[in-house]
Image: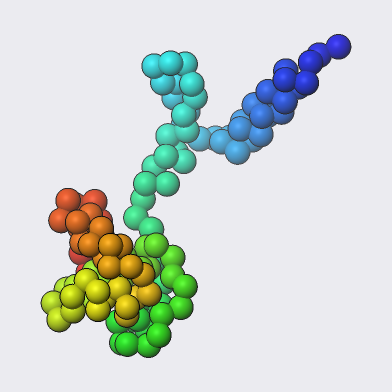
Length: 115
């Protein structure tokens, strides 16, 4: 009789193999598998909802936004150079700290500029 842990591990292996079938797999220094295909897709630039960004930039009240959309709206408003971090935060619907963090990420080259 196999133990529950072995059965769970086997099921986990099967799910992982099915999720990454046909992908490029590498083994890291400690012997763990890593899917290069999924890692590259995860790191690619997120797709933004340009309509949501345009609504916020035009001054309409913000709706809940995805992080990528929020960053794009902050960068768009920041590129205009007219608003402080607090004013951008109110317009986008986030905290002033989020605006400062997004600006710092742009300066560090972690995210791109406004469109």
